[in-house]
Length: 167
Image (cartoon, rainbow, N blue to C red; front, side):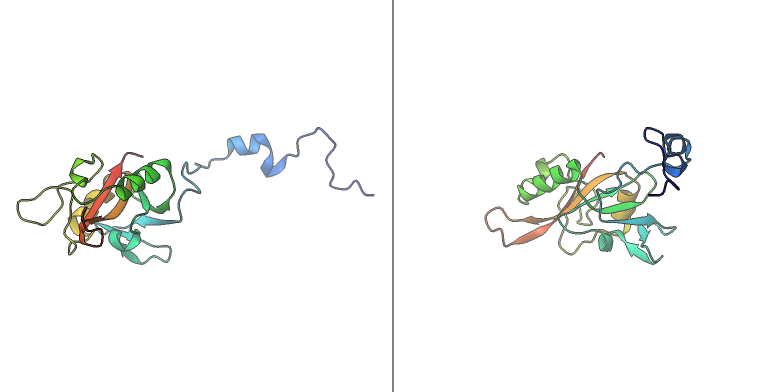
């Protein structure tokens, strides 16, 4: 048996794993690490993001339907978020019909292009892009993009809604 490179029992190992090395490291840990599937970085183009290869991606292209995404204070966006806020919004969306979204306080309002309408229900032809994407990217929080279906006919798509909660 060799004793080379062996640490005596009860003695700290030192090196990069030593408590003093970890505590003095100048590294900021991500408080959300591990609760998302992918991260997009902010870009210089308003309402747009940058993927891992450096390509421009619109917010509407980056996020998934009925799945949480988080806008971070630095402008980055985490998609596939599995936080409690995301799960709460997903449940609220799942239990609501098109008529119910006006009563949900988390529903984002005021971005529809429909003349004279500033409610949360977006027409199916509208997109999560342009001014709405820019406003979302400037407002940190957890979001869920969901379809709005008719209460009496769940197969009838009425439009879509974006729900938001503080992170």
